[in-house]
Length: 336
Image 1 (cartoon, rainbow, N blue to C red):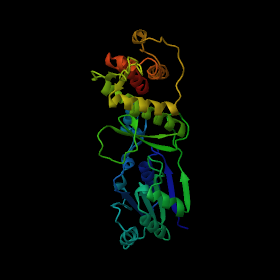
Image 2: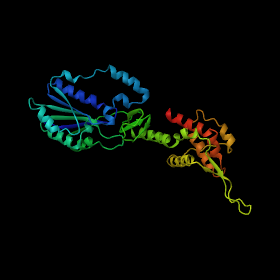
Image 3: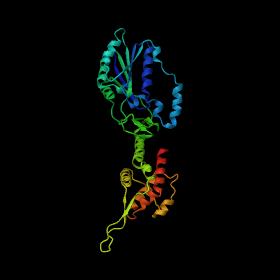
Image 4: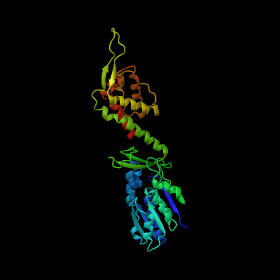
């Protein structure tokens, strides 16, 4: 009895190759096959296995993929390859293609890109032919693709193809990176190097933390390195020769934003405590070369806290380049 089958995985599961392998298997058994390629634009539709690996392994994997024998579906007389758009009526397509000869099997690659109506078309087609759909379950924002959602709801058979995270645990998350950092931006035209990885939840959380550090903390490296002055000194107006408050610094907006972003990050990622000198000259002499992320973050946290009792400490460390060195070391630690 014919069935509607859905096989899914994360990035790293080569569903395109799996669809072609399925097609080849049935073709060699003498079945007549309609092979459907979705053409809807999507980030993951062109993500091959080697693109889903870390940069360190990408080159080796790419070399292997070149030597792998690519399946040539054109050599099978009873296989017809058809590309569809989101507007294609698959029932009408099936009836048209089966007018002269009976179609035994329909294979769909990138099935997650089908519309709800197209999946329901496939359900109808499965009354007359076995239908095998291959694709991803969720997008990079952990939301079900439209096609995958309907396939999970109405397929006769649903099979998860296990893929490995870089840590060798099971990958469950589809991660999209631009220039090495996680992104949830839906703009496919955004400049930068786009890569994809299938990750377990633990590794995904690590990458999310690393990305937050880059977006909330390291971004100030570019601002501070060209900053001549971080703010101006001010004090309350004396009244009867009595100073109401010690001199303090009115910091520039960028510095205020830095302190706010640092506090927000610190709330979710409590820093480790360290013992450091309590004067600015000694802080300037501390070498952060080869120091850990936690150590440098603790230094910055200490300075921001000390600003309350030693006004101007943050100003001096920004203006003389010390803060820039610290941020540069943080950037290094999250890029390794």
